[in-house]
Length: 478
Image 1: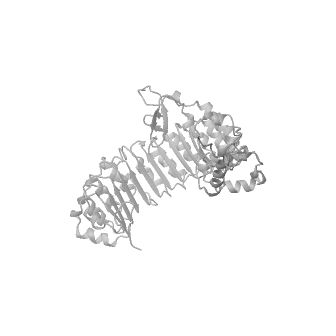
Image 2: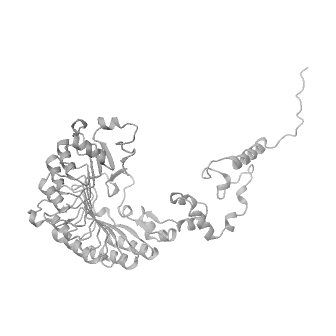
Image 3: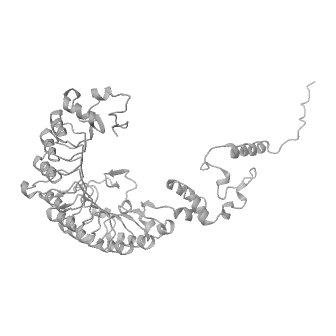
C-alpha cells in the first residue's frame, strides 16, 4: 500500500519568493558597492505597480528637507560630466544642477532659439555653437573632421568643397540666437561663433562686458567692425578659410579694423587669413599688449615678416601648417628683429623655401626657445640659418628626417647658452656620429631627451634610468 506524503510542519507560503526577494534587497542595499545608476526600484519615478513588491519610493522625498543652497553645495562636488545624471532625479535637481554647468557645446539650434538653453543653464561662461549652425544629415553617416571643425555631410560631392554655403544657418538666424544667449547669460567669458554678422557681434560686444575670449569661423573683413566695442577681449581666434569646408576672406582691412577696436589683445590666432606687412604692422602698433601671435595655414603676401618688429611686446610666435613662411621677404636691410621675442614654434610647416626660413630666423634672432616639429624640407643647409639665433637655451626638434648630425652638430655647439636639448624621431641622426664636443655638451645640459630613432645606441644604453625615453624621466641637473 503506497505511503501517503508527509505533511510539512510549516504553513504554506502564498508567495515563496517574496521573503527571499526582500532579504536579498536588504543585503544589497546595506553591503553592495554598486553605483546607484543601475536599476533599482528606489530610484524609479512612478514605478509600475506590482502587488508582489513593496513600493519603497512611495514615501516622502527626504532631499526636500535640504535647502537649495546646501544642495547646490553638495552638487558642486560632483564632476561636471555627471551633473546631467543628477538632473534626471527630479525637476528641482535638474534646475539646480543646470546652474553649476559652466561650459557647453551646442548641437541643436532649436534648443537655444526656444529659450530652453537659458532656462536650463543660466550660468554659462563658455559656449560653442559652431556644430549647431551646420545643417546636419542624420541619414548619411558621413562625418568630416579637421583640427578646427567636425560636421556631418551629405553623400553629394561638391566641386569647391564639402560644405556648401547653404549648409550653414543664415546670418540673421544666428544673430537672433546669439541675442537670446547674450540676454540670458550675462557672465559669458568665451564664445565660439560661425557665420555671424556685424550686428550679431555688436550685440555680443554690448551685452557681454566680461567677454575675454572669442573664436570666429566663416567671417570676413567688415564683420569685424562688430567687435570694436569688446574692450576687455584678450584672446581672439579668426578662422577665415578652411580648405574643404568654406572659403571666406580676412585681409589687411579686417586686421586693421580688428587692431583699432581690440587694443587689449594678449593672444591672436589667424587661421587661413590673408594679409601683408600693413595688416601685421597695424596689429603690432595698436595691440601693444599682444604677447602671442599664431599663424596657421596663412595666406600672407610676401614681406609680412618685416612687420614683426612693430610688435613691441610679442613674446611667442607660432607657425602651424604653413605652406610657405614668407614668399618674398625682401633684402636683409629691410628686416628688423622683434626685441622681446622669446619663443618660436614651427609645427607642420613647409621649410623648403630657404630664403623665407632665413628671413624668419633674422626676425626672430632673440628667441630663447626654438621648437621645430614635423616640418618638411628642414635639411642641413636650411637648419644652418638657425645659428643666427645666438641666445637659444632650449632646442627641440621632432620628426625632421632630412636633418643629419653634420647639420645638427655645428649649430648646437654655436649656442653657448643652450641647456636643454630634445631630439626625437629624426632618423638620419646617428649615435655613431656624435662628436667629442657634442658628448661634452651633453654632460653639461640641464635636460636631455635623445631618441632620434628606435635603434639609438645612447637610448638603449640609458635603459632603466628613464633618461632619453618618451614619457620617462628627463635627464635634469639642478
